[in-house]
Image (cartoon, rainbow, N blue to C red; front, top):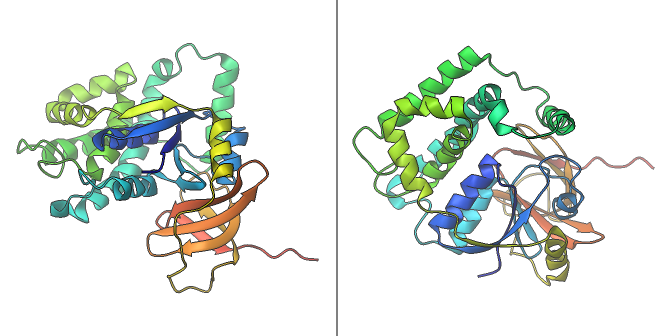
Length: 311
């Protein structure tokens, strides 16, 4: 198997999701720690401007968004399956709810009631920079008042507790699936702050389930410098197979842009090399990284033709 390089940082919820998937698959991987806030020059060299964390690198192929990253990991290491046959489709539906509705309920609430724990020891200038960075990523986000956030979170947790009421080991049965890891990332983040962690005491089945999920660990990782990851991309002599099979007005070789539809709306420009029902792939050239193929899931991203420059 080609070397897996995860670009992440320790306190990122979506990074924890992918780390647990790597643990479930019992994989070895290289670990590149990325900055939490902009600027991120080495990240941009590989992604072309995608700034969200984490992303996965395999040679000169860069996979963005945990939805796609988990599919790629499962394809490379199919056992044990991340998408078990008995919960096919349903696991991804629950995961999408967990990555969106549940995430945007649990994380803002935890940040509101647990900021002192989350940012313990951080200097004032960092707090100001972090706030500005996240505001730029989510300019239209309306955070619920804490009492409303707590009510919404209690409803979500109650649903999860009910799913586990029959004593099942994982959310959808006796085996783990993508639904478990997408959900676990938000519980993991809640446990980082005393106030939100205390809220979980009322849900003992969630506590037992969470222990099963985190028991997978993170696999075996070895550190890697970001400059070495860029050199790895530059030295690659091939890319993962990609082709345009979805019928649209766009064709292979067209200049395009890809933009996340929910937040961090940075346009990533390149040449279209792959497009199907699940994935879009663009090629781009960087002075340090060489030619890289940047992959995005089809769900959650907008693809459009690049604006033509006026001569």
